[in-house]
View 1 (cartoon, rainbow, N blue to C red):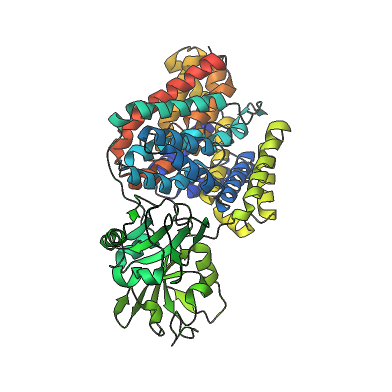
View 2 (cartoon, helix red, strand yellow; view 1 turned 90 degrees about the horizontal axis):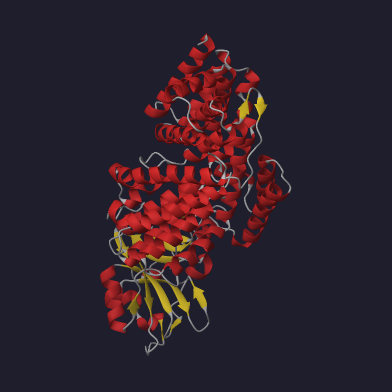
Length: 604
């Protein structure tokens, strides 16, 4: 072993310790590598920063921007809505449809984004069906992770592969976008079948804890509020009265925030007192559950289990609550909300008014407003943003943060077109991955789907610098001969394995590493090592690299992956729950991966 090899090994141990104990953030570890490696002479200064312009890093930046564009235009929400409806009331159908859809979407966008998109809808449907949310969230999360194995751009480890496949200074033949697709699809199908057959044995029955946003926090703060409810006026109802005649607010202290007129097939999100309610209409109200029940009993209306007609329009991503304060130079001072046509002017609903140490839930539109009065409002996020961005002096100042953002549904077609442009270049014209994807990302920005600032904000710069810093470490492994030395040592321990046994060893090593080190870190560290092992054993180094890239997503035993961490609290999971379901999933992942390689990729 040469001094350079010893130094490289010391750096490797140092990096693993930093990853495990988290003394500094992972992106700082990457920056440390970019500075340390040229200082100690393991790489040149030029090689130290080559990661920032690498094909892998540029591809990840572009994929994130394209995914953010699809999310901003509501394309993903349109996909989620019908899936939830198709699932009906069958737990198995819910698992198949939600997990399968999330898995497919994860093949083209960051898996954390796909999981986060379906999280609220999954929680809603679990509540409506009366089944523990933990029985659905873990299958969805695992399939989001596995979905990244379907295409080369689905997960960071596989995006990295083509850049890392260097042997003796020569680049190996790169993988195509769909090289791994048969393996990924089989892994996804296996995961869904696993949870359908064994889910009741391995999944806990916890209700979980939903992330409390500003709207939920405000509901808790105001004692006269509890939740948003949807009521349906039956077909045989003789109701045909205005909101004023029904006296819903004065009698029941419940605020109507939306009406669906069935005959006109229209929705009104700032109902007026003159609006007429008829049979087959639906209304959304906010208030206490007991008051809503009294309202439904008195008029013979039906309370829905969850939001149905308003599931999309009143979802957390589209609408919510904000607490506002009457500004010092506000045009509202000394006037009532009815006098200034508050709803018509601002297009939001006043829900409560805090003035003179009293909270009013009824009659608030007839109270003269004073400076410093607090108004609780409900409405679409885009209307709140318009109100917040008014020129000074503003009528109202916001006391709480706005949860939602302004969506651009009119740009949805453009977002899809630019995704198609990027994929067409990759599939049919064999354009380099980074160039094709960045052209799609550039199109997203130029056509106004995202602004430049929004694109910068969407990028996970922590991942970018982690990748950029670990790529030169992989180069140091290859240049100093450390990867070859470690490969020889491992082969000396396991003897002369057949190619499929070697790949099994590679898969097990990667699956272990990815639990304690990030999946990106495991990929960068193990690809050079495992390619050298394959060459020495007479195997295909490209297949060894592919197994590393795929097995880096085999991270189910601990909640260390971003997706597992995301669903942990909403699902009410403990670490032992991941171990219980994850151990079997880990074994199945390796078994299916190796079986497909054996039968379809010519590995013997």
